Length: 153
Image (cartoon, rainbow, N blue to C red; front, side, top):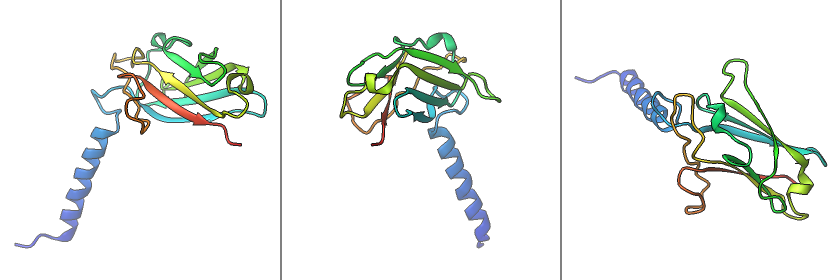
């Protein structure tokens, strides 16, 4: 007996959805992961990095200079201020604003910097920080998430 095509298509869509939800982080029982990242760096101003996570983060596990490290060529552990929140989930969005303007963190011609989220960062359900993949195997410590950024110009 031949099945209608729409049943096969619907089944394929369901399998794909199940596969993707299991691989993207954020499902029940999964680790804490970075959902998205962005930054701004005004002309001579501070670097402001926004990270959105797949789960609510235990704020006490995020310590500037220890478990969250902003590094450029000139300043390998730049200090700054953390703010939290979105309207719907107050602990899934973190914004880090550097204390120094970006030219004091980066060197003259180097425009790249990193934000490291150490493996000690935990979700509110105590799940650990998932290692980010940079495409450069062997460059990250196990469990650390290193986010790469570059100021255009």
